[in-house]
Image 1 (cartoon, one colour):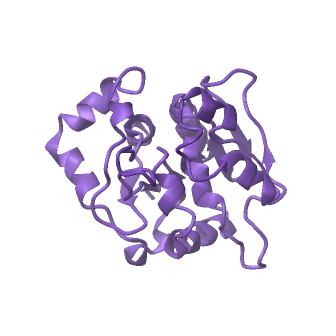
Image 2: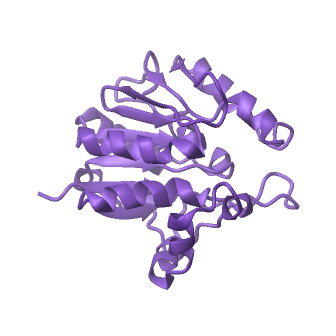
Length: 227
């Protein structure tokens, strides 16, 4: 049986202030996609609303813009996948062995409130499938509750984009909330690397999380190992 991965991307194209664009941090998708592809996994892309996924402009410059991201943008078939993402109501969680939440600041807006994504995540997690996120992707886990009403992240070790990294990236005043503080409020045992922006991944049973864009490959490799 071929393993199947559900990759989650955003539909949001700007911060609260429309003068500041954002979107998917492309390499967080492409790094993981490549590793999953090398393992022969089937992949689908879903977004909270379905349809187009905008790209974070800063992810198309150094250091985020590497050969995997460039190759994706140069491939019309790949770009079409981001224009025509599935909506959660079209996804049967039983078809997937893992769900992987990509990042970019845009996900802070549309990931947390998606009941459809919460349903899929809960169902995959509760039957022992893998729930993974990288960077801001952990915002997709903020409000996900298990069948018993507890937060999925409560008492579990994880990581994600640190508040220190937000400040260093110059967007501390643009973001709608402090994701690190919010995930801790839900009872998560948050960890981060000693230095900002270096690859850091945490595995807690079937929950796999990466801290920042540079962690996408390592996160995907951990998911592949578990599968």
